[in-house]
Length: 321
Image 1 (tube, rainbow, N blue to C red):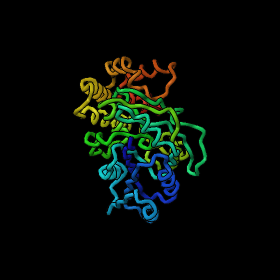
Image 2 (image 1 turned 90 degrees about the vertical axis):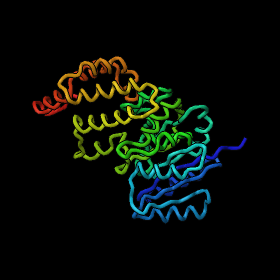
Image 3 (image 1 turned 45 degrees about the vertical axis):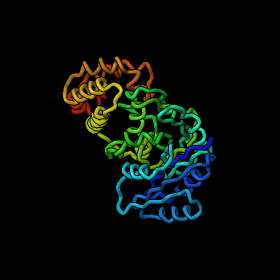
Image 4 (image 1 turned 60 degrees about the vertical axis):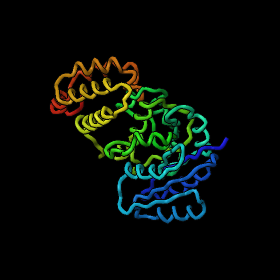
């Protein structure tokens, strides 16, 4: 049986420091029937020259360069539109793929819409941080899209999905993480499967688009985000975006959650929202690792709307969360 073509969508922007190491790990995948679609987002360093150098050696590398910078999500959107494979894998410019990654994922995808794997964290110099993705969050298997309404466990660098998903996930909304959206849509259209093995060394540094280890907050003492307002309003926009997906498995659930979430942001009390969270806690908060002993206290705090939280902040100078 012939191996189906896998397209690797590689997005690059000023990535010369780590790009060679990543390209080598993509080229040396044991799975042979692959193409690399690399789109450079108008880099100002030596990234494009590196890509040209590798293309001359490896004809399965196809290059595209943006005349202007279009941003992270839109650059991936463009790369995906050039992919020819039956299956698509996403690649950042600064990670290191293990040689068997693609082979193991293609063996596991079966009838699933998407398959993904665990990852090892490394620092900017490639040294292990002795921690895996599964140490930080729970990795989900199944078909419940509601799991992705508040959190995401499917990192772009870790997933392989069917090209047929493209007609449902594109175009990307640049206000949201594209990998989170892909996971949400895939769970609505079928099932997601997790390979419980680390198949990528996932580099953590200041330039990461995501900061799952709170690296910037830990290293930079001045890093701060208005958790009460900015974070909750951003989450509300995301939930509304999910509610607008026309192929939701349970549109009534998503619509109700969006309505309750919004009510909480504009009220002093949100008892109905707290009851909803209590009833669906195991689904909505599956990905987040929390101690069971803290669950009841957390749910109790959901009774307080954003207005109450802001009053608390003004009185005591800290969040009621």
